Image (cartoon, rainbow, N blue to C red; front, side):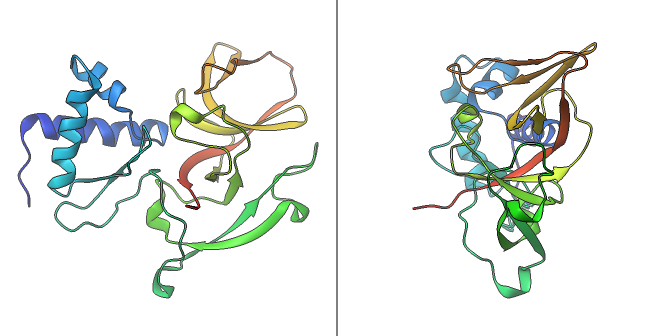
Length: 220
């Protein structure tokens, strides 16, 4: 077992808690804010040290590209960090997930006509067992590392905790946003300042479709 410093243990636990509570790892800025660092650069230095010790894997170019690894083994224990979409070895093909493209207004997400393809994927890519992949449209979740064209892994659920990234149906639209509920008011929060928060009023046509448990990106 590789020995970590007390600060590295603290950051590793923070990452684990964030993934457990929201489904996604924290950003460098969130780590810095939580631990009282003066800048995100300090958090980055600690993350690089954790990566060198085999505790995490860092995907460059994205604010939440952190994957937990089994210490010293280099094996992922599951996180929504970006994963290059290449088919794993046949022995690891344990999940067969339908890919959902555009969803017709008023019809179920998993309706046969919405299924564009089926992917066999390694379940260790995800924090929970997904039921399907949904193709992301638009850049409203950019700062969460979710980009237009990404495939978000979704676990069917009719309930969510504040802070989790969800797939929700609002009227005729299906959207990916961060969930927040206060009293009877539900808000769907973007992760891009160019987009506005969606406020769901009581009685409005709204339904939770599922929770984001991971992300796949096809590298060009």
